[in-house]
Length: 426
Ligand code: AMP
Ligand code: GLY
Image (cartoon, rainbow, N blue to C red; front, side, top):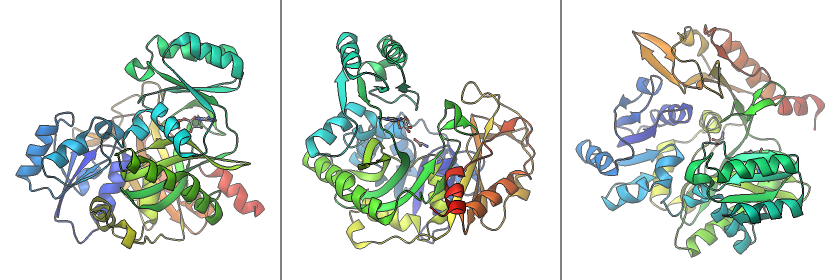
């Protein structure tokens, strides 16, 4: 089959790498892709906001499946439009993508269907938001309702910080995404990412991961899109997975269907594992980046078979096999990230870094004058499989030693929590 993959990050490189191993694949196109994706796909330049142009391309190239990587096009309704033109799309409808596109929508769904989450209020005027914050007290969490590229959440440890975050939102720091805010209880516990492959009716667990959001070693410095991840997440024991399915995922699937917006695609639940059990922090309606990279390393089955089954409503008949090994990815970022990254520095040595059980996924790279250069904040994802988290970590960092890129930086402690656990046995 001919497949079109939309997106350009490390997530999409991992998806392209895995799909390219499928005997079902005839031709893979990616738009816009990146040089790593270009090793396994034909790169094409489409305006993803122009849904009819994407449809025309699908017509011309006889595309059998469109796989949408990032959330933006999904929230804008690309899956609906392409389906209306008769194309098969992996990714939720616009109505189902509200699970990511509106935090308030998801919170109200939790209330309606009794899904455990932080206590919250939804506000579209600053005076009532500030009154709620005053009454609830700090610490408290302020969230812009809409898509804000991961920057719309403030964990306010004091009332002053909370009020400043509300001022910023209502003064337009996040544009239309901040015209409404969610104010919610600060949860404590260990975070985990939980993925399900969904076909509108059935949700199949699709792996777990833990991400490292802060830019610096020891979880210090500003938040990022993710500086590294590993899978599986040890905190997601079989019991915790079963509770998450029963208390969070299944009511969400039933709830969305009852609202006329059945969810098909990847449902990515950000969880806080609290003393009382799993609570939903947020939903994303696509794979995580860099979580996808570690999931793809561990997936034993044919990704295209699974994506097809999700599109065709056939997941009730499927099971998914995973490697028992741990996968760990270290993000190499360009100096300046998560602020303004320096672009254009030359990267060498990637061929020496890759080997048995080690893949280097490209995120923000480009080719300039024949050389591979940095072209974004997060640039490379050095990803390794190991029998233990410690082994996967050692392999990933050993691979980084081969990469010659003085202008890049990375965290030196990805997986630390799980490595500690392995050492202490709990
Ligand atoms: P989100 O964009 O909603 O994933 O939020 C970004 C990060 O903020 C999460 O990964 C958590 O680390 C943190 N966070 C969000 N909501 C809460 C909450 N209610 N309590 C504690 N931490 C939170
Ligand atoms: N790594 C977090 C995300 O993809 O949203």
